[in-house]
Amino acid sequence: MKHKTIRGYIRYTSKKPERLNAERGREFFTITKQYDEKIVVQAHCEIDDEPNVVRDVVIAMDEKGAPLDCSVRLSVGDELEGTGWYWFKEDSVELEVFNKEKGRISERIPVKQPVKWLQAHPIVADALLMKLYDLTKGKGVQYFKDLLLTSPDHRGATGPMIFTLESIGLEYHGEEVITIKAGIFNARHFSLASADGLEEEHPAYNVWVTANEDYLFLKAGVEGYMQTHYELEELEYFE
Image (cartoon, rainbow, N blue to C red; front, side, top):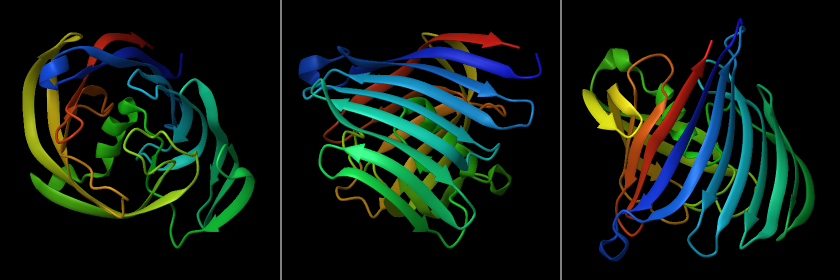
């Protein structure tokens, strides 16, 4: 095969004292790195907390993580919230969307420069976001502007639509060896230092990814009011 495929399973758990380590959701994903270096991520995400969320995402991106096209289907409380398709060009983003709040929308949004990242809310994709960070500059915080979200909600439970994030700050803490359910890995530790433009401030968020070109998600934790944990439990490679 000229492409490489990675398939895995992420468990969502709670870190709240009254629900410590209780399962609160799950994610099944496939990442295919094609022969032309393009990456296609497929993710089925389930959040059990009421109102429950079921999200199916297919997103294609270049080797740096910049989006090429994306489809999202979202159900909240076991009812369709919305479904949408996105197409990214150098000077614009096109979308065809139906959602419960606004109905059918066809839109072309001009952009000043190619979009560097689309946050469609799969946890596995949070690791690929860290590709934006320039590791040659070492540890510290780097800032990135004009990124897009399919939903500004922390659970990604609205839309799908287009929401512009003013900027985010990513902090790199260095490499370490971690042990998780899926095994022992050399990891890079990142965190979300800031997210300007959200309707509600995002709690502190730490993410560990593989210390190689795959930037595969390993584990993560959100603090504050969410107190959630995410961990890779199953992993398969096909080459």
